[in-house]
Image (cartoon, rainbow, N blue to C red; front, side):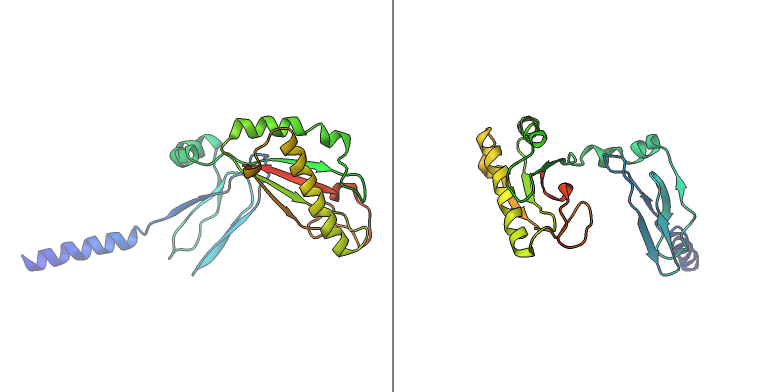
Length: 198
């Protein structure tokens, strides 16, 4: 009797060890369709996912398998519950400025009503306003200018009815350019404020 029980327990342990849990990893595109990459490592190997909906089952103690692309329908079926509770992706707006000033371009001013409409639709929400500059001029002045631009956009949003408690303001100066340039370069795309509504 004890011998049979011992064999049964040994068999269960062996089956549990052989069926080590595998996790399914799927590389998802962002809402805009862009795809990043992920590299998964364990003690016996690594695998890199680089394509939309590329997937791999991965266990701690086994070499990773070759990734396969699965359909969006299969992803939705497999991860339906998790996908339903994901927070809505933030909406982002880029507002541009005239060189050396806190004056919005007309095209950027025209985006303000759309930003307000989106904020009202998403309340409760957070609004992040981050100022940037190009590299024209010195670093300290650009940091100050990027802050002033962010404050200017906050004031514009307050003037059209956005609640002040929703808005966070920050600035990066010339440290995070959209278009990388050398020093002392005037680049219109870097003279901006990024507004994120989440």
